Length: 161
Ligand SMILES: Nc1ncnc2c1ncn2[C@@H]1O[C@H](COP(=O)(O)OP(=O)(O)O)[C@@H](O)[C@H]1O
Ligand SMILES: [Mg+2]
Image (cartoon, rainbow, N blue to C red; front, side, top):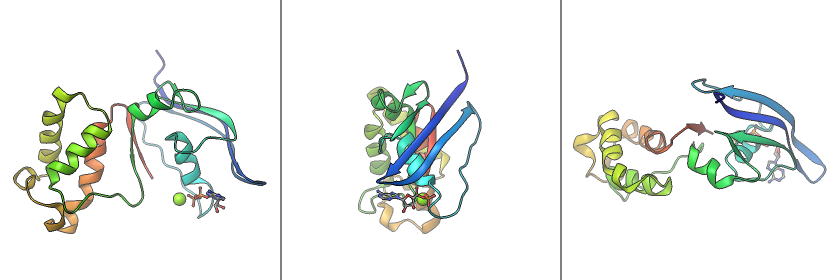
């Protein structure tokens, strides 16, 4: 089995006559950290949206963890985690409850949910605060919550947008 987790071939997205992503081709191996750098408007977010199956490509194809973004969107969504630029945790829920939402959204097997949430809270040093509302957390406590939630839930990898 190949250890390529992301394979992108001629991925293209047009908005009307404007080409936002133009025949992007690359591959990323398991364990690699890959970043898209570029000026505003260069097509980074459009690319991530296509790879996370939120936006269909105009042309080209990509496979994420072996699943086609065009024909196997459910497989892609199960395999990935995505932390958008403005990550939202709900301040009116506890840390535990926020993590539980992610566990359910990402379809974690029910028997694994409690253990993964406990592990995530421990990792963030929030074990004692899991029952407190996130709105009462200090800023430094909040930002890792979303990231860690997604990592805890994702099987193959995470997209940080
Ligand atoms: N839904 C859309 N309709 C029309 N143009 C869009 C749309 N989304 C993005 N664009 C355009 O595509 C280009 C790439 O945008 P984007 O992927 O957000 O860039 P980046 O994330 O690199 O800043 C920009 O010129 C943007 O205005
Ligand atoms: Mg962007």
